Length: 293
Image (tube, rainbow, N blue to C red; front, side, top):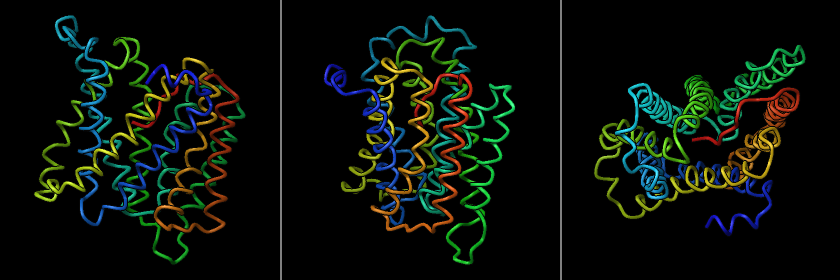
């Protein structure tokens, strides 16, 4: 597969990855009336853990014997973050439109980018993003945007910020995808009791099991693989700018797949956050960008 990806332009890989993540989210949301978000998250993480472990099995051989307690704690923290971030955003998806949830979640990487800069202009980007979020959460009487949905999206944003910072540390201590593989296993173990208790026997239905595996492939395995290949051939700054299109992609998938029609005000708010993310990425050197876990 890797040899085939080489022939695809790096920007196209990033865009395909973004589309894959959001299609996975849209697919997951279509079955929330049959399986709760926690069960879908468990299936997503389990699929990712199995596939990434198979891919990085050579790197994983004999890994534990050469690792310090600090490394193992780092992997554990990464796994907890991975589980918490995914749980929070899926709970948000269950309560508010996909495009709105992803836009709010994007405050996480924006916050990390701004935190690593000392440029006064970044205050303008923060203000613009804040304006967008205020427009998104303003009550219009429709009841589509709930306090709980926004709170879960903000929790996911904090988780994404932690995910980025931990990814940098993991990348320095673990080769290839071995760190992510171990963290995915930790995240799966954390979500297993929650997912099984909430999903029950419904988890055994073949069609729902297939959807859960598809969500794991679309939302984790494919975008992660595409992002790694893209980052080998493009600057992290350009990668970050392209990733800023993710809220718009989520809104489009929400519209096409789920019938979630956003108001003009909400599209304008999403635009504010996207412009803020692009501006923050262009005006300072961010830490290494990583895809949504």
